[in-house]
Amino acid sequence: MDQHEEQEFAEYFAARREAVRRMAYAMCGDWHRADDLAQTAFIALHRHWRKVRDKGALDAYVRRTLTRAVIDESRRPWRREHAAEVLPDRPDGAGRVDDAVAVKQTLLDGLQQVPPKQRAVLVLRFLEGLDVTGVAEVMRCSEGTVKSQCARGLTALREALGDELGDLRSA
Image (cartoon, rainbow, N blue to C red; front, side, top):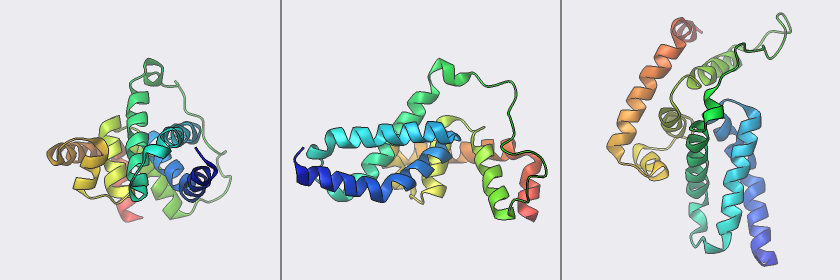
């Protein structure tokens, strides 16, 4: 890449880094993995930067690359193993968490119980605000598949939240 292309990429990276990282976190539930997945998406973009003709489609390219990376990683055998015990982020009584933050964290925790493809559809649809057509383009599937994965994902999320769903509604 020439200096001008490097500058363009650096500007895009600086502008979108945090948004891509947050989307990765919503899909995987772990900030360290989110960093790795976002880095994977940006490396792929950097590698193909010169070939990208429509700079307006960069977000779509990064979303697609990130979504593929999350789904591919979830298939790896070592990702199927879960720790026997989950350690708390902070000790009990370490401060009151704002209700909105608690609701968001509960939803993100619930999302981690949803299968990876369904989780990706839910994140793209409801957190990233894409319509059914946009999600279908990112995931390279039919709109019908997006709708069915979305319905199944919402059912799985409701089941994962269980009693907490009632608590969220009253919050």
